[in-house]
Image 1 (cartoon, rainbow over the protein chains, first blue to last red):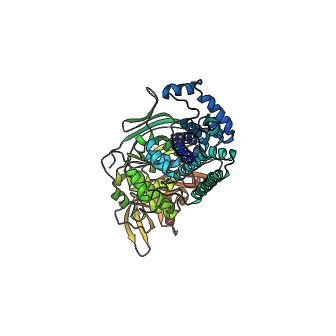
Image 2: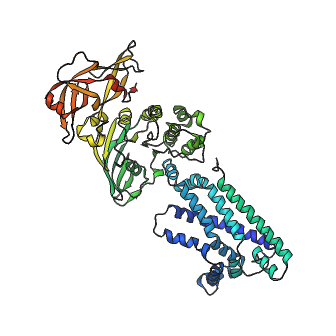
Image 3: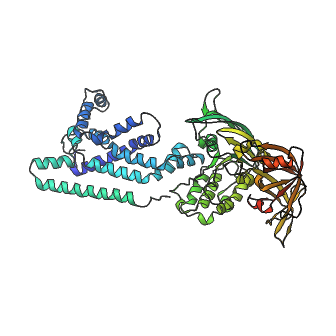
Length: 223
Length: 371
């Protein structure tokens, strides 16, 4: 991670965050869609917190959590020999928390729309719960997966506050596009700022058009 | 044919204030109807048997295997390990797969059992060839249910549970699918438990029946005897009450388009059937379509007059009506009269009567041709 400009770093961060959030967010969304537990509203609220909290608040708590003097940060140092704060790994963890609702909420909605009916039908045909998920639920929720992934990716690319708090501005490690724009403006380097900002604007617009187009098309057919 | 597996269950399940509690042992052969009005708990029973209601307390054993138990500790076999097939009221085909994909889904997960059904056989028996590449959203209600039944069979269940599979269909579509269902036990060697609130469907399909009311079993036994029971009025429904008679085709009157049937002593005429002499048929005779006389009537348009003897009379105190059970050669029939007629004619157990059946009324019940 010693080379590569802010653009490369930004897209790498977004890609890693999206993949990891797919792995973490899918079971969480599945649980939220099907649980009868009384803890559900509490977990839903925690999942949605990043939507309402100022990024600086999230970043502040993460910094404290990442501190080598805190249990988690200390454990990480003994495990890997380096601290999480101001590192790419720290940024990934921060981005995953920051973008969590953008992954979980579309997936939860998609799973809830499927309902229990097709899942029960699959079970009575001899499909195990795991088989039911991969053969019925996942293909039926394909559009939800696409929406969730695109939104997570795009949202991670646009983050600023959390990155600034947790990652700082280390070229090649934590200096992503939004930070670079901030720096260019601070140093009155408007040409560079324009290029990065314009690029991000166009990219975000294209992503949102994709999402809305996905949501209005006829049901996706696979198989 | 079926090896007559035994299913025994006793369980209890509460949905808020409504509780279903049922205990029953049955030797599974042919089609058993689980009959009752909506809200009687029929669907719940099927769901418990299939393992779709994990909150039910009780014991379920099928052919020596315990599906659910309380002793020595709570055990619960999940639905995918129970080897039951389930045909849902709403078909529930997978919308992301074609008809062929839905069928293949089931076949590739079929329980290891001597192959009675394979893909081509099932597709052929249910006439699904033209539908294979279609998507579920483009199918009619009748087609959906045919695919759903075929799909359930391809998973090779040892017990097939059917939850009102015809309730969403109109009468012609029902008539189109009933024969497919009637042949299931014979063609695929699988016993069927069939949930319905339709006496017609019970009469057409089932050999045995269990009557449910308010979450409890109120009767069980052979269809003919159970439908003839007068004490089950509230559960079987007065308007639809009647009996199922088995008969043999004697011959046809082609000029007047009539078929003569033998009920086992008594003979009646019905609108002409598409069945050869000697064929066995089942028909439903509703209590409200039978008139009783104490003397042999003459000069009557009704041609079906059957001699019999009153077995039982049940008066319904707060209504004008009384139900009677009449023994005729070869079986029992029910007749619904006014209490006033019962009093005027002196109808009581032991009295000899003539039962008049309007031949046209037999058309109302479905007539099943069994070879």
